[in-house]
Length: 110
Image 1 (cartoon, rainbow, N blue to C red):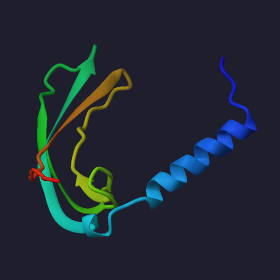
Image 2: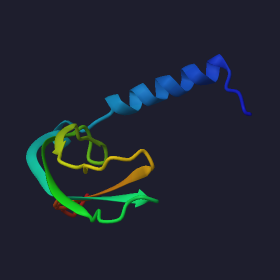
Image 3: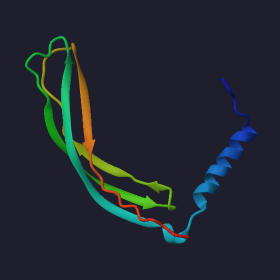
Image 4: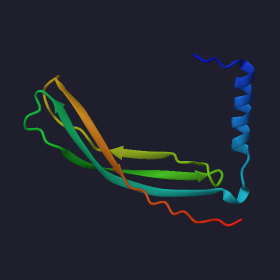
C-alpha cells in the first residue's frame, strides 16, 4: 500500500482549500427547487410468493449553491415512501429510485 508522508498531506490540503477560495464573484448563484419521483420496491428470496412490486413516491427540496462555474454544492431533504409487509426472516429487499431534474446549460463565450 502506498503511504503519503505528512508534507504531501499538508500540500494536498492547502491546494484543496485554495481551490475552493478561487472563484468568480459573478458566478455565485443559489437556486432553490422541488424534486419528486417514483420508487419501486421488490422482494427476492425463497419465500416471496404472492409479493409483487410496490410503487410509491418521493418528494423533496434542494438548494443548489454555485461556488464557481464548474463547482456546485447541492444539499437536499428527501422523503421517500417504501417498504412492504411480510413475516419471514428469509427475504431481502431490492429498492430502486427514479429521479428527475431539469438542468439548463448556457454556452459561454470568452
